Image (cartoon, rainbow, N blue to C red; front, side, top):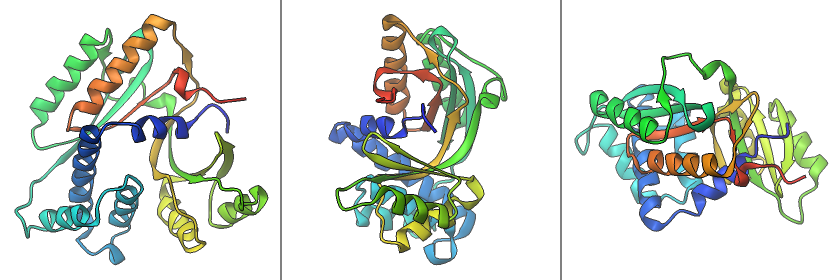
Length: 247
């Protein structure tokens, strides 16, 4: 399972400033709101909410923030309804881009996303124009420590229901089917593992190489998407320097 380098992407996110970290908390708060609306405010009976809480904790979101987001979503603090909308398009050099959003104003969000595509030298396309180039997978990143045995961790992950296992960039990458992501994550938690990241992801079937100028444009585009509160996740198939595997 070479070529994915999810850990490199996580490192890029983790290196953000405190202000940007606040934006990450805002985005996760919206995910909590949607999860609560779908399955209720009790994590013990809402697997989607458990997944989002795990994601919040891996991003060092304070417990008070998590509790407040759940109360707000359940109506105790005045709920806001968010709609999930996914956009697809093309970035610099024709790279494929998928943008997942949660919004309370779809006209504003559509305009903002289109504007980012345009000023990045790309274009927003129709639904399905690039999604066929990606596979939806659960991705769990476990930080590798000196006392861990690679084969033992791999067998534990596979026994927990994982589809694939990879040692990458000094970390373990566990891949799952989306339908079994929650159970695999919970089984690994019960086995005593803590996660750098645990979330559903869109993995490209292949990557395209960019020249230096196109790379700069792509990084600016990703920053602009990061700065937009409505944008939850951005997936692409560009092979950026910080996303290349270390052979």
